[in-house]
Length: 241
Image (cartoon, rainbow, N blue to C red):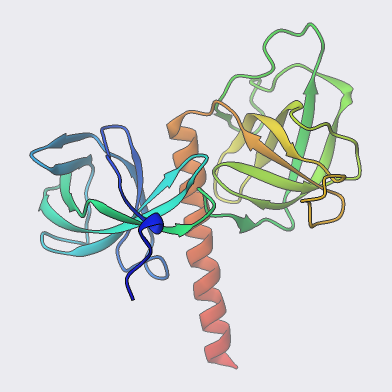
């Protein structure tokens, strides 16, 4: 049965657009999170190698559209070298999820939430920092707290808290992901514990604001790699039972 027209659309993918390339579809293989370098003669060119894939190989392409959803389509590798590769991407994309970014459970990880000091200048610089970096924004010790992460995506996080946060409140979140850098990111509260739409008791959701594509790309890479790692561990566990 053909997909409804409201779930299928044409997307214009230009230079700088961030794409997720799945060598064997979303359920298998490590995805590549890459920005389009340039578009020439209907081919989308990327920097880097697509090995072990070669010319003629097919893959699934996903595109997160902020404030909309995630879309996917098919593509074929039209050219490749050690330094660049090009994709011929189908122009018709299908909506695969209402949410723009894949969300993954983050139980066991913590986040430090800071309310910037009044009169302390800019709330925070968008970006990330290594653990122990002096890039942490100035914050009042009475205006920061440590919370347990519930889940995260490249668009924001959700954490457990009975502490009062106001809708649209600006905060700075500081967290570390296994095998990745520490992130210090400005964010805005989009869901508080008392909101009717909040289905998880004592949870707060924040959306990242103003982060650059390099930071979002790193978050996306971690989420997809962790998703694949968990899927493989689950498959291995079931096979051993």
